[in-house]
Length: 190
Image (tube, rainbow, N blue to C red; front, side):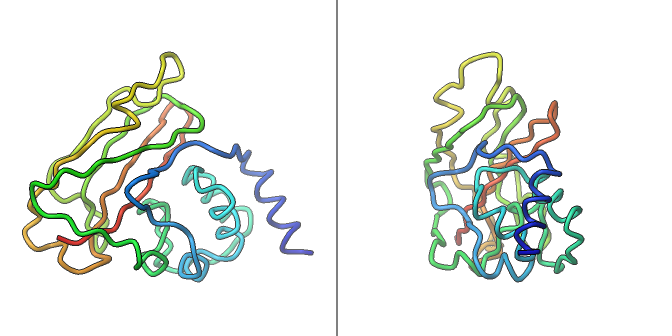
């Protein structure tokens, strides 16, 4: 009962508003037992019940529950989602291959968005941004098709992504006016 009460308090204290945006294709990292081990039960419950949520909401749960996070719980990398929960979803892409993305937006918030290759061992972008939306998911104009359905061309990452779990394609949406960040990661090898 105490855990449930703590979770309800944490959700209320963070001002949680469910449903914002995720990558719906290719398959993205999702929470599982590795996420729960790294980030704690209450954060796992929130992330599982609202996979469209923002990373700041998870930070708020942590602040309000005072859970000691494991070093692997890096909320600014794939929203803390762990490779160990997603080993069955690793994609293989070759340099020059076109990869189609579908983004599911449940609630728009004006910001910027991009897709980049991220080295998960250093949490750093490899190469140039692959796709950029300067006025993403605006609240003042309709969301366009090129914001929710687009393609990227895989760069040659020079062998940096040959081991599964070392690289992701990360869709990152920063709605700075409301201080909310959304991200989804697609594990891949090359």
